[in-house]
Amino acid sequence: MKWTDNLENFPYPFKGSTYRYSNNSIPMKLPLSVEVTLDYKEEMKLKRNLLTHHPERCYQSLPHTFTGQWEIVELVMEHLVAQYPEKFSLETNESQWIFHNKILGEKHEFTFGVEKNLPCEPLAFISRHVQEDLILMMQRDGDLYLDAGQLCFPANWSLAFNLGMKFKSIHHPIPGFKEEGLDDRILQFLMRLEAGNPWERKNWSLMAGDRLDTSLETFDQWGQLRKQVTKENAGELVHIRVEVQKLFRLPRSNAILFTIHTHLLSLEKLASNPEWLKQFYEILSELPPHITEYKGIALYKEAVLDYLEEQLESGKVL
Image (cartoon, rainbow, N blue to C red; front, side, top):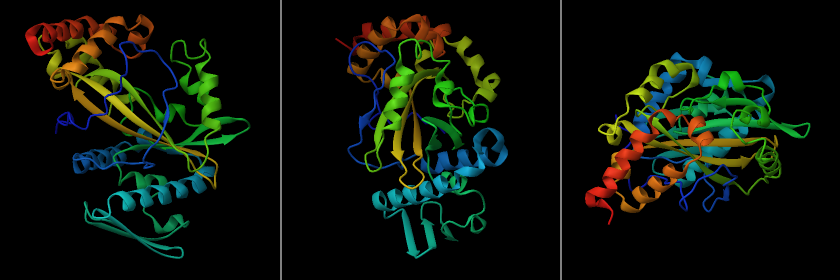
């Protein structure tokens, strides 16, 4: 299955001709935590396979997170039913709930708030019905902690390693993040999030290959492709990876839910949009070395630029 065929709905992340790290969050116009795309069935199959066979890297939680986990179940189910009533339904009779996933042909009856009625923890359960990765950060002692999460499609990081860590510690490896004061500004922004006023942002990177599951633990399986990129194969092999991240304050637990929907687009597809081709060439040409290195682009940046330049000169962009 290729995850790269939908140019029309790809969440292109750039504005302007340069890129720097920033807090690029914006208020959500349509406050929905999840989205169902044409790849739903294929991504659910992949995600459930990963959760079944690699739970140690795909799902982690701490015992004090269950109130937040149940809030996530409620929020996500309500959003699915509101936006896709032909695909999902939810019947509630006080604490007795019946959730119907019509796409997968599954019906689940459970008592809300009672874990034993579910086949797994609440966060793990709802994560098996959405394409997004789901991260729960708890707020206490003037800080945010990653205390639970389902992460099947990470961009080269480890949920197991980061479990229980503070926000600043998780983002410490990002070059310039602390030195430029971004870590403190973004942390303060997150802690001021209000229930009912969600925000969203886009994060991007390049990758060699079209895997969604690029965890730190599996780097040996996909990292070597970076050494194989040439001008001749860059269009098909290299993909721009965009994460649409949505931020919701959970009113009862005061925790924050991050939903992360990952999209891939091959450079060949990107180059078919003249405006995107020109803009991305300018951005990548000017991208500072510390960002290029951190995003894992350094090994094949020149090959990608050669490919993009060839597309520009071929007459696709006048």
